[in-house]
Length: 128
Image 1 (cartoon, rainbow, N blue to C red):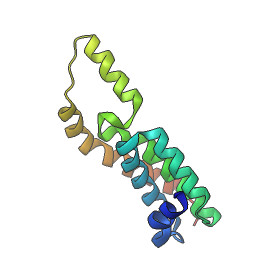
Image 2 (cartoon, rainbow, N blue to C red; image 1 turned 90 degrees about the vertical axis):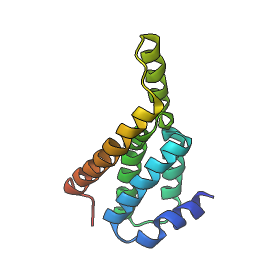
Image 3 (cartoon, rainbow, N blue to C red; image 1 turned 180 degrees about the vertical axis):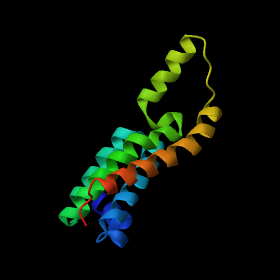
Image 4 (cartoon, rainbow, N blue to C red; image 1 turned 90 degrees about the horizontal axis):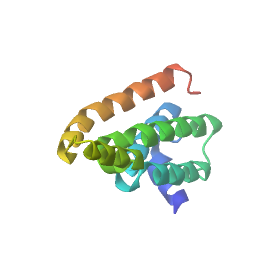
């Protein structure tokens, strides 16, 4: 299943490390919001491992997966258990943050932070 996922997601860009990093970050962010960040990172790491990528593309995919799985969950409150725990703690202290207000801010902030992290990853030397 993960080999199929890797070929589907990374197949068209497998020879371009920068594109592999961006696609991996997007997949990590989407996966984190669908079924949480840790499972998404584990599935994507397994997919990258079995994808038969070049060393440069595998390195770029690892960076992209980390970026997407770590920053992507900020889009929705269900993307990370830590966010859910913060919601509980805030409510216990009398501060109510609605899901929709969190998502409205996340839609703006999350893509910007992912793009900034990808830019830093490229500047720090994703192998070409």
